Length: 204
Image (cartoon, rainbow, N blue to C red; front, side, top):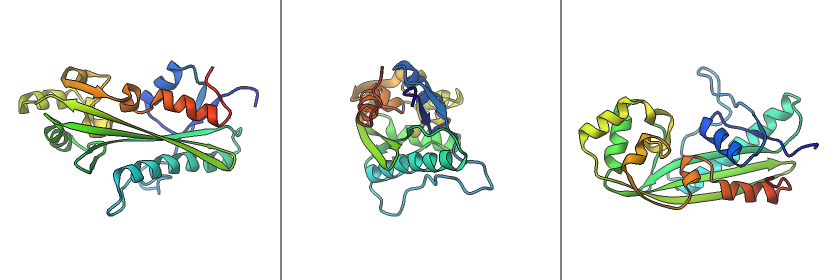
């Protein structure tokens, strides 16, 4: 390879911005998600599946599905990065809320509590899939129903695990973070850089 450019198997604007922050060059490799067609990755937990196992499985599946898609489409072979981020409280996985009601319910449960944000990052290159996991603890202040309603009306919660974005308006009610800020956003940069270096593609 002439450069250390990679493929990113994610539509997430936040992950794209984070990779740019550490000067990793990439092309977005879109996975199939259109309604009416079988998705490349089915993001549903199996019965009794532990949250960390689920996050690792989905991240690895995204990277491997991206790799297979790259080969099938005749795209230039490069490492394929996949990631998954989930909010976990009392063993329950909080994904992206489907609607306002779901977003409000999630935020009501998270308010006044400390939860975990687990992000798994997988890198497929040749016959190996490298993996790393980042776990952070986030504390959210007590929130009134009116404040939750006002936040949900901004539209910010709907494409974010747990129904909030630490880099957005939600920063006003996050009182403590133990762990990786970028990991809570969706891509832990220190761990991702180490993963790329391990596969032979060091961050410049």
